[in-house]
Length: 341
Image (cartoon, rainbow, N blue to C red):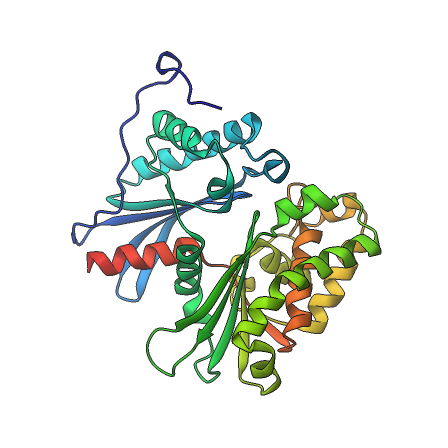
């Protein structure tokens, strides 16, 4: 759909972008617009990195129906614009001085994304930047880097998104930044898989089909980098960054409501991931929706996410996974603050 006519849009003030000025009182903002979620972090610089002073997250399902149609639907765009208006208000209220607003897979795929970006700028003032899958992986790795075990020389980082799953194969030195040895963006995410396979009631055969499809998709990446052989030598760790992984962490802890402080950095054994995944796949939709760590908005998506993660765990049986409630936004903030310093 094209942008709304000027007469129907209120003029807005352009919001700050990534142009750090090095001022001691700078306020930074990072926005991640994915296929499923719209998320914002606002932070202030401090000696240990940054301190979050405001945040926002809303499930918008921007990529709903995209796999079949090739375009962003009007309802999805409208939901997303409303969420971005909230983000714009927070940026103004917090007097943000430097920001970066990035969009990922849904906007990379949609043929009408240029018009959508124009509409967002006109209605909210936010200058959305569509980033490549390579840049997405870099930001995720940067955002999760603090959770890597420096005594384990190789790492797999998995980020299960709405429209795709990003995988990174890392060299982890004792000191210094981890190095990306290889990365791939697999076109299977929780929204796209749910659109094709369903998510309210999923049979065991359907679940197994999702696992098999993801397994097929990552096999070339494994072969190209010899990951399975490294796993067999015991020199590999896994870090998971996504709503799927954090949701499983909350369910594992039997939390009544999701709590980031208890989940971020948690270690989940692979056998527990398999148990929880099968349990959720067999659970009625209403029961999943009633779980405080899942909720109605994720109840149909969580099974697809479990199947994607299940395939990764089977391909690379490291034995346990570190849960990261962090990713692109934290990577963006790190870049902004480094530039300002």
